[in-house]
Image (cartoon, rainbow over the protein chains, first blue to last red):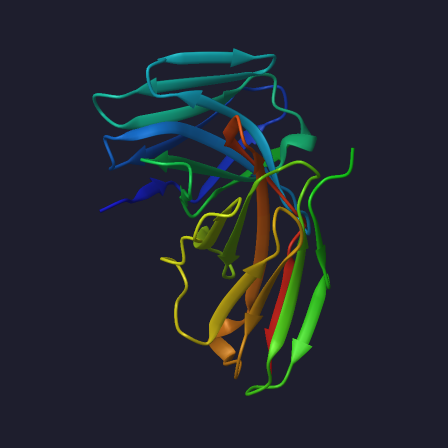
Length: 111
Length: 114
């Protein structure tokens, strides 16, 4: 079946890099996503990667995809306090009708 | 342009009552999705609408849940005879036809069943 797993908590120092990891089970995933959720807010689409790519960079964000191991990661360079949030990994499988989400990783940035 | 909007932002209801949640998708977005997020958890897919096609209802947890959408506009999610386990944030998302892989979410409706 479809399942997405991610660690629940990550704490980093301001200015350091953060790496949030995710594993998924469905090898037919077409797109993989990272969403950000700040307290009391909806989900913000941060970035996504098509399954035939292995890396995507967007300013401070780098997404790495290891399709063989079904592993996705999000690296945030120069992490700031404004990056404190819950980050959700998600996969889209088959058609475009739904996303399968992980439980979210809470990123805490401390001075 | 305006994003996805949802109303109400908060709803408190008594167990056994019916509730209606509303979603206004981004203008021009043909696809609309409902998800549920229980406290401390990820999102669970509920239902998907695409244009005039039959909706994908595979995620609805019970027959107390139903949703409607008129054309490519507003959608309502109805929960009948609410139970305490229905307490959650209900999120709506929409996507554009040619870029259906980009789903944009509304702020959600927090439902509390007492």
